[in-house]
Length: 76
Image (cartoon, rainbow, N blue to C red; front, side, top):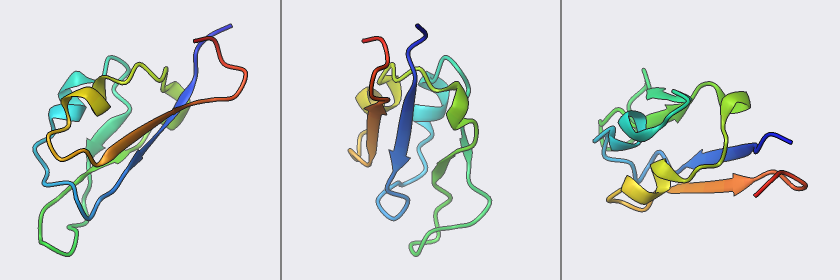
């Protein structure tokens, strides 16, 4: 079974450093086209179905605004 996951980004906390985008092996994240309330362009999830819940984005986020969930029943 292929490991699957879901990434949730708190876009109000994200400062737009894009370390998560660069660390994702499946390229599921991109820069948002809409700024948050602070005027920065946060990261956003665009290809959630490709997520393998590796946690790279969570590990590199300096603002701890990313949560990664593994789908129930997914391979760990």
